Length: 380
Image (cartoon, rainbow, N blue to C red; front, top):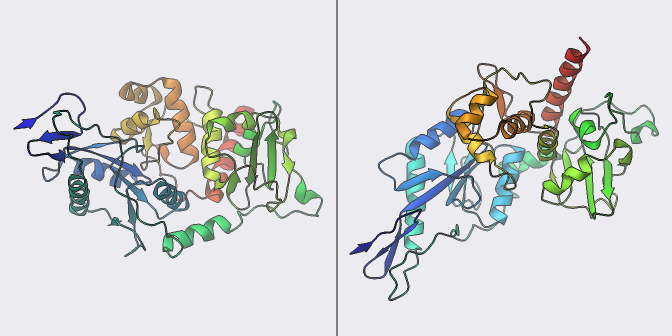
């Protein structure tokens, strides 16, 4: 006889000491709009068990589009955390990759992969303790991750080349001017965030808050920044006056102590989120219908973004319409659109979608165009 339980039960206790997992979760990272929609529709296949979309923190499977700098870094980070991941790629093979999904997305291939994950978890399901009829709560653990070896993966090679290649910017006229930090053309005192979002940082700089033990190194030429992995503590540094920025050599020993290297796009995303102040940025149309062009990697520090992304993936809408559909505050939706527009994940419905290239050069170029447009509108 089978003992079933109400609520969000992941395991079902079966007579004879065998446990079968009945509920599975899938997370997506970087898939474009069409692929994300197909993946979500595939979860309803009668060939599968019970699957649902997850924000990704404890999902049974995370599918990552690795054919980009940002996507491949998500892949490396997820594997390092012991997550079960599937690489979504144009490549025919990927070294030491347990699960690989080829582009373009094929619904049947995805069903086969999800069935494989179901089989792995069913085999690994722990049996309930003798004399207990309770289900074992799902703690998000998955099978051991494949060995982290990525040096020979073609996408990793592209990522290394893209992140190491300097972002085009005007060459300095003299050695002295090479170490200058331009002032943002704003009426209010420039901050680190306003300089960054206006694309006015052309050289390697460091800003520190000794009292809080925090540091932030920004290197536009390499498309990287260094800081602690968590984003929220960086808000205090982004709000500091631009006069606190200190030009430094990227290889200066004190730079390496502020934290690990991370893609500059992530910092730009967060700077746009912090600058939102509950409303759309001046260069974005508040009356437009906004859509999600591909599924983003939701930052763990902002779990409420998952509901907004889900609503936008289902249907484009104005800020108010999205807030209603997601049951989220309008201020959260405005911040979400500001941040993911900068990163190239959000566009006006019916307009040409931003390029899928999330490199720092592309994002900085988009920012410069956007801020120039906003300045022009303000002047008129």
